[in-house]
Length: 385
Ligand code: TGC
Ligand code: FAD
Image (cartoon, rainbow, N blue to C red; front, side, top):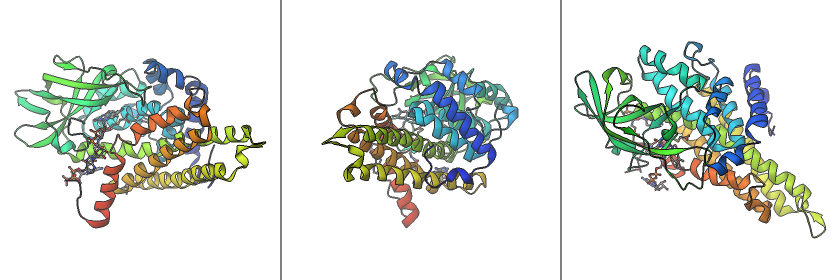
């Protein structure tokens, strides 16, 4: 385990146990298959059930809904380990936990919680989160609408770039509610007439994770499927805050893989009569990766503690998502360089991680959007519009 600053000493015994158990799972069951799933364009559906058995889906929720009441720090350790194998595999767990189970638990009625959470926690059911539309980074520009009609809402519109939508049993859909002029959340079973989720093909990134659209043609859902506690854009954005927190840990797992691969390669690869690990230019790359990983781990751990204390703020999460993901992306690029030609092949994982991280740098708020969140924090001036 890569941990120059002994962050592990700051964890509770339960958090260490979660880290160790997920590490063993990743090493035994994910790493041997990650490249094959990436090549195939998706991990098997059954993997979600294995994640459920491992307690990786919504583990911070209370046990009555299938969670384990774990700390945010423990959750972060698990996301670190999943992304050590592949960002798309971490996505599988973080969408289900933070973006589907999270809003149903936080904003939904007791009936909705009991109906959906246990099946999502066990991985019997797959969920997806539909926020993004043509407006991309600006979800306030959403055009999908929900119209009240007696005891139902009728949803019309479309979403793009939705993780797992073609596989999902249920979608959490965000729509502008007519007559209220604010955003509401709806639990939409995917067998509802008028719902479809065409797959997006041709991805060169995050291939182990399936991505699609959501098309809603006069989709009628019972009014009871509305997430009553979600009133306004702040609701889906608060779910993003949770998922971005997990990503800040996950990116460091990916960075550990890039660093470890580059280090091992550099020690074994001889040019001009010496291992390339003995060259200052190569050591500089390894030192940079190690430094960024070490600082990032402290940052994510600190965020986890603040989250567990209920003191986490969105700009703090923007800082960690932005910097840890960019550090992992730069680290994967540097590792690819250390490996020379070998770095472009699938015999090593660095190019896969590099390509995946291009997505991670973009989704859940692009690098530049998080820069603007921090700029607003610094100046009080909104530079988005
Ligand atoms: P703004 O005026 O700033 O805020 C509107 C309301 O929301 C509140 N708020 C937040 N609450 C919780 N967490 C956050 N991160 C929040 N950010 C804002 C805010 O306090 C306000 O509340 P109220 O009560 O005052 O109304 O909104 P804005 O329209 O100016 O937008 C700000 C901006 C640009 C930061 C936001 O739109 C944004 O974050 N854009 C990026 C969009 C994004 O990240 N999309 C992600 C889609 S999901 C995804 O990518 C899943 S990937 C899945 C996988 O892992 O595979
Ligand atoms: P745009 O918003 O069009 O941005 C394009 C470029 O312009 C970026 O560089 C951006 O930083 C820049 N830019 C935009 N606005 C500004 C500004 N005001 N100032 C300066 N620069 C700006 N969404 C979901 O809802 N659910 C999901 O499950 C989901 N999964 C995804 C899975 C994958 C594989 C991918 C790639 C995306 C996924 N997304 C999902 C969507 C993701 O959140 C969006 O791609 C992201 O928010 C950015 O939107 P965009 O791609 O339309 O880029």
